[in-house]
Image 1 (cartoon, one colour):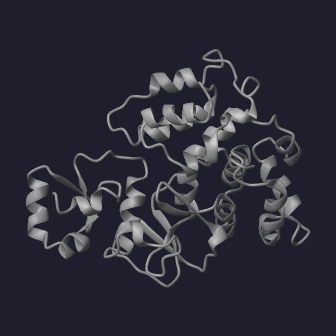
Image 2: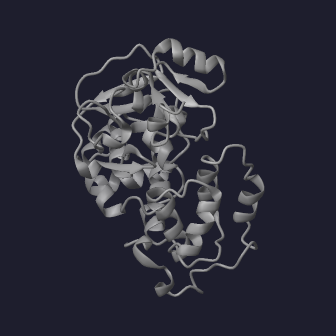
Length: 309
């Protein structure tokens, strides 16, 4: 296990059989370690230390590692020519958008790939740097690119509308940019004017009883919420203790509302065995703590961690 820790320490507690082989830990040894309770087999060719925290993204992490099984995760660029980027329904789930049922892990790859694993789905396409964001070490298509990919798949309009609403409310996409990018899909979704992204956006949002005007004029999220959401997505704290420490570093004593609930849920994924139901119930209770956006001056959001909107 000491030899394997070279990889497991930086790969969410996981190692591929190919990486283990490069350390002279062969398949027979991995099997013995599994039987002895030191590792678990996550998927074909990928093992995890039993002491590693199990996150909600473990399936995607293991699938991404297996795609380029020889290279260490920290050496791979986001646009790895021998790997892939989590996309489509998988990207929506990792961003916390919508309520899609994911029966397969979707990845966009730069060249045609096949797999014997029925839970993998590949889309061959060229992505640009602006199409990808790294979430907790995983390359994932941005919310904007994800929405465009799902439109290209002709996903059900109501599901798309929920994803769009969630992305806008989380400040992951701008309505004007989105309307411009989705125009090519207008005819496919029944909009009579080709290329009219604004009309398509209105049509989609109408399916969930809202409009672009309502989204555009929604109350601005408190600065505390915006800072926490940004931090959870871009500087994952890793543990509940880290999340609370991060709040302190941001100059925020505490927070209320669904954003901190998402933060607690995310952090709990890195802290095995922690039950956050009570914390989340409290976070979603508006009486829990006063809203801090009105109390915290901008100069209290300290250092380089302050989000630039």
